[in-house]
Amino acid sequence: MKPLMPYPVRTDHGALAVQARPARRWEWLWKKKHVCPWWLARTFDNRFRERFHPSGKILEPYLRPGMTALDLGCGMGFFSLAMARLEGPRGMVLSVDIQPEMLARTARKARQAGLDSRMETLRPDSDCLVLPLPVDFALAFWMAHEVNDLPLLLGRIHHYLNPGGTFMLVEPLLHVSKKRFALERALAMETGLRIEAEPRVGFSRTALFKKV
Image (cartoon, rainbow, N blue to C red; front, side):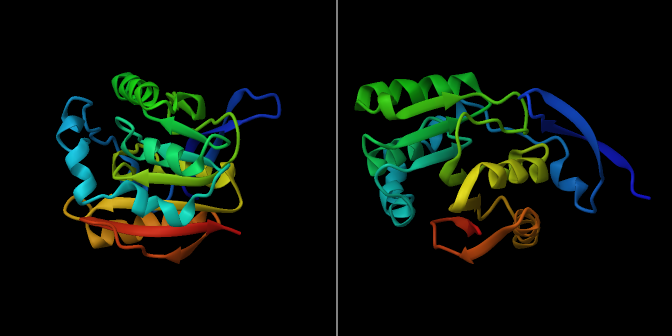
C-alpha cells in the first residue's frame, strides 16, 4: 500500500476540502523549490528579451480574438501583455503569480499599455489553482520547475482548460535536464492531456498539449 498524501480539492459548494491520494514515484519533483525573487526577474523580463523570446511570434499560433488565456507564473507580465494584444478587446488574460510584487508590476504595465480592461491578476494561495472561469490556452513559461506540487497544478490546468484547449509547457534548457523535462511531460499526460507538438522556443525545452 502506497502512503497517502493530502490532496486539496474543491467541493460542490466552492470550499476547499482535503482528501487522500497515493504518493507517486515522482514525489521528488515537488519537494520545496526555489522561486525566482521578483527583483531578479528584471534581469530577463525586459524589452531586450524580445530578441530571443519574441512573445507575439511564440503565442500567435495558439491565440485568437475573444479567447481566454492563462499565464502561470506571469512574472512582470512579459507574455500576459502579448496575450492581451493577440486576443483583442473581447478576450481575457488571467495573470497568475505567487509574488505580489510581480502582479503589481504586471497590473501597472497593463494600465500603461491600455490593456487593463482585458487582464486580471490573481495570486493563488497554493498550487491548488482556483480560477474565476475556464480558459482556452494556458502557458507555463520557465516556472514548472519551481512548483511545490506539480502533479496537483497540472491537474488543475487540465480541469480549467476548455475541451480542445491547449497548454504550452516551457522550461529553461540549461536549468531543466532532458530527463527532468520528460518526467514533467509524463505528469501532464497523466492528467489526460495529449501531447501535440514540440514548438521551438529559444533556450528552452517545450511541449504543447491539447485537452481532448
